[in-house]
Length: 349
Image 1: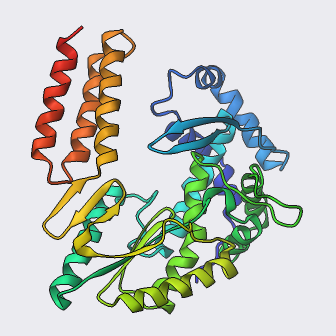
Image 2 (image 1 turned 90 degrees about the horizontal axis):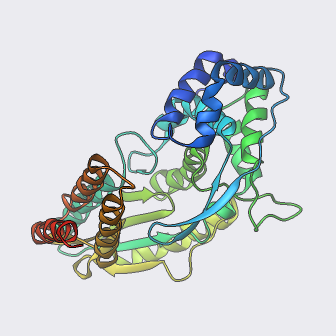
C-alpha cells in the first residue's frame, strides 16, 4: 500500500485553489453568491489560502433544501469558499484513492456512471444465464446511507493511506462540518448529499465493503452504485449465504445496516430493477417511474421556455439529455412518443 506523507501543501496551494475554482464555477456563473466571490477573486482565494496554511480555516454552515430526484432528498449546500476547498481536496484525494477501488464500483468516478453500470450488469446476467441456464440476483440497499456514515471509522480508513497530519486535519474539518440526526455523544455520523468531497469520501468508505465482497467472499459478478449493489450467481442459496455475511460485515466494520424492504433475491427472468432501468433476458427497458419522471420534467422545461425563463438552447440540452437516457434501453417507440409530446406541448398554448 502506497503511503502519502506530504500532500497538504499541494491541496492548499494557490495553483490548486485556482484549478478548484475553475472546476467549481462551471455552470454556476449566474449564481449571486458565485458572482460576489468572483468580484474579488484573487483577494478571496489568497485569504482562503492563508487561512488554510495557518490552520485558522473554519468550515461555514450548510443551507438545507429538498429536491425530488426521483425520491425526496435533503441536500445541504455549503458556502462558495467551502465548496472551493471541497474541490481542492477532491482534486488531490481522487487520484490517490480511485486506483484502489474495485473496477465495478460505478458512482462518482470518471468514465463510469449509471449507464455503464447497467450495461456491465446486463453482460454479467447474460454470462451467468448462458453458462448455467439459470441466474439469480441479490440486490441490496443500505438504510439511511449518507446520514449513518460514521466519522471515526471514515477517518481511520483515510489515515491508513494518508499520513500527513495537516492533510488529515483539513479532511477532518470537512468530515466534521456536518452531522446528521443519527449522531450521538459517542458517534458523530453523516455526510451531506450534494457535497463534492462526500463523493470521494463515500467511495473510500464503501470500498471496505467492496474489497470484502470481492477478495474475501470471492464474488465474481458484483456491481455497486453508491449504496445500491448487486451480486449475480446461478445458486440462490449461495446468494442468501453471502447476504448474511455482508450484513454482519456492514454492522461490525462500518456501522451500517440493510434497508429491511430493499434486500431481495430474484430470478433474472423476473427483470432486474437497477438505476432506473429494468434488465430482462431479451431487453433493457426504462422503469415506469423513470419514464413518467422524464415526461414530467420535459413538460416543465417546455413551460419554462414558453414563459421566457430558459432559452431554446437550454431546452434542447434537456431534451437531448432525456434522449440519452432512452438510448441505453430498447425504447424506440418511447423516443418517438417523447418527440411527439414535445412538439405538441410547444404548439399548444
